[in-house]
Structure formats: C-alpha cells, structure tokens
Length: 150
Image 1 (cartoon, rainbow, N blue to C red):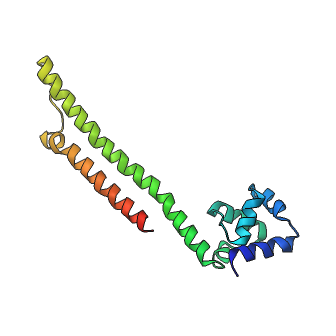
Image 2 (cartoon, rainbow, N blue to C red):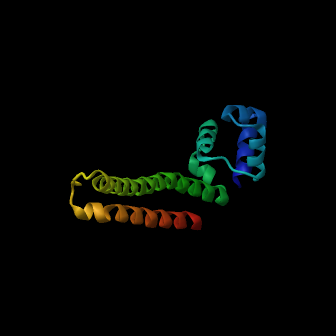
Image 3 (cartoon, rainbow, N blue to C red):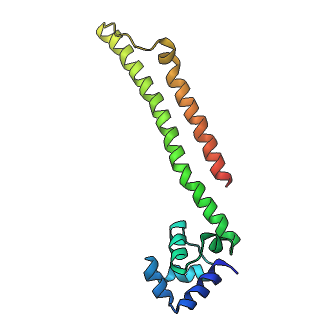
C-alpha cells in the first residue's frame, strides 16, 4: 500500500474529508489531494503530525512507500547541508579577514612610516589566510559534489 492509499484509508476510517484533514494539518485541501494521489509528498514535520493524528508510527507511514522514504532521507541530508556550507563560508571569511588585516598593516607601515608588528608569527600572517581560504574552498567543493550526487 502506498503512502497516499494509506493516508486516504486512515482519513476515511475517521470519517474526515480532505478539507477536515487539511485543516488539522494547517495545509490546503489540494496538498492532501496531491498526497493521496501520489503527486506529491509531505515534509517530515507534516508526517509527524499525520502520525500523531492517526496513531501510526512514522515507520508505518514511511515503509508503505519507497519513494516517500527516499524523499525523507534526502530532506534529512539537505538539512545538514546549509550548516556545513555556513561553516565553510565562515572559514573562508576568516581567511579573508586575516588577509585584509595583513594588507592593512603593511599599507599603514609603508604609507605612514609606522612599525606595527603583527602578533602570532610570520607563518600565520603569510600563509594563514591562504590555508583557510583554500581549505574552505576544497571543503565547500566536496560538500557541493556530495549533495549533487544525492
């Protein structure tokens, strides 16, 4: 039995119309109709609400439809993607900030005749920004390729 068939059967057992179910789930009647016809699937949040409404486990809902199971797994992976991408963006920006600070200090030293020393050693200031930006670029590329495959 597919998810749509199961949803319709459970709805009918309760004597609810598609409008009734839509109202309880805070979605449109068209959404319920698409789920029942197999044209679309609900997200995990709605699946949890459906599970609660009908007293079914998530497993009972998911295992009834292979395509829905794949969608939920894909959605779960997509939730992790923005967080990891944000991490790599922050690492890249840290590299840019290091580079801007170094260039700013070098320009001040040259233009104003100052002798401002950069703390932390020359390796950090000469290669730190490059390492951070390259690592972030590689990590972001790997992440993009990984989620493109799925």
